[in-house]
Length: 309
Image (cartoon, rainbow, N blue to C red):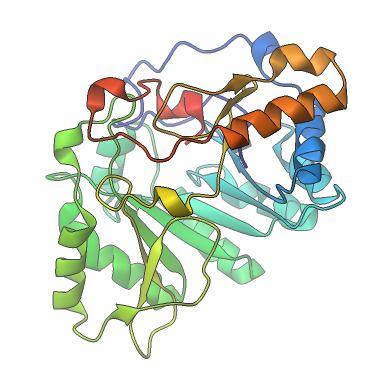
């Protein structure tokens, strides 16, 4: 279960939201810490044992580190990880490590400072770079998420792969999805990425080892540590193996990122645990057979920060 704990973000990435940001949800509408923990406790009883904390940017919410610890302590919980843009990670890393964080995914789409500023509008590239080094020193399992855009950063595929392989960590190249403010014409397909990688690493080969819980297909370069993953959100149609649901910061359960369908758990928080469990189970059972990203008009057009990116 991916849990968005806030719709706030300290970046304004061009594919996620407009420069002025999105209309923020009133704080009274955001799930409280105890409500998130209750839903997680019920989820473990239904067999959901792995959780990923997301936002917006999760580290802008003060309870984030404590929430990681408390979810980890739930009976039946096997793993708690986080996805972050890395802007606030280095200074919070000691507390996250002490809380028992199992892994951290850091979003970083470029190695060029000017381009990073162009994509994020407000970001400082040094911060995720320092955070990656700090995670490695702490021995925390670290991955880089890179969302490719045609004509923006698709000329850095080899540089980014080499950056990760040189540090012995994984990088995942993600196809741009037509969600929120993303321009579907800028999507770089995984086949194109593989063509570039095969030219750079002729010996690259499929990697069948387990790298995580998600839909990435991994490759390895013999003699090098770290893996290269491809998340083919548009062209791969990995729906038959998708094992995730999303809980938004306002308590809405989305069985599929593509659709606006789901179940709002907020009204059931006033009821019994059995009622909550029944509704959460319905959301899982109603997970659609496959996404419809090829039909842009049918896609949920909320900003990714609102959904839980």
